[in-house]
Length: 153
Image (cartoon, rainbow, N blue to C red; front, side, top):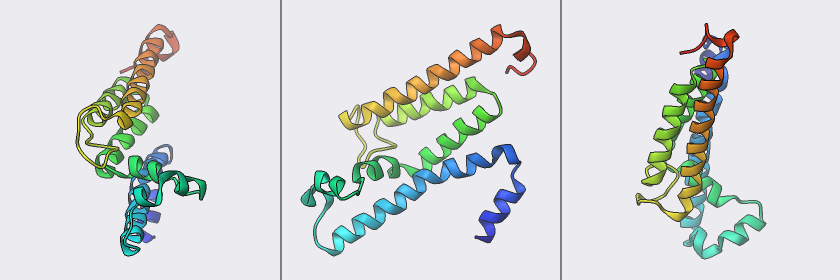
């Protein structure tokens, strides 16, 4: 708590959202580990209990699984995308979104196992590419706007 308080106090005010964005994968990773430990203690698994049953009880196991797996890398990438958004550096944010897409494509992030083009990961691949496309669009839109020429990369 003391460390978190200091981080928020010492970070420039406009960059504080980065801290919280980078926590999301870690919180999901913690919750996923907790859920899996509970299943292990009960000598069962999420698949045996049934993902649909878990969902009907308000346990979004698939969400935890996708968001929590690869937390160290996805946290860094999300933080990079966020800070470059805040600093109005859209091409840099786009690069990190493309990196995230590639890592998702190979199952490095958002997957419990490494594997190429897993069906459950393709929405992440496409979503990160769409985010990259939006940042590239923003970059070129800013270039056409004379008011933004001083701020462009």
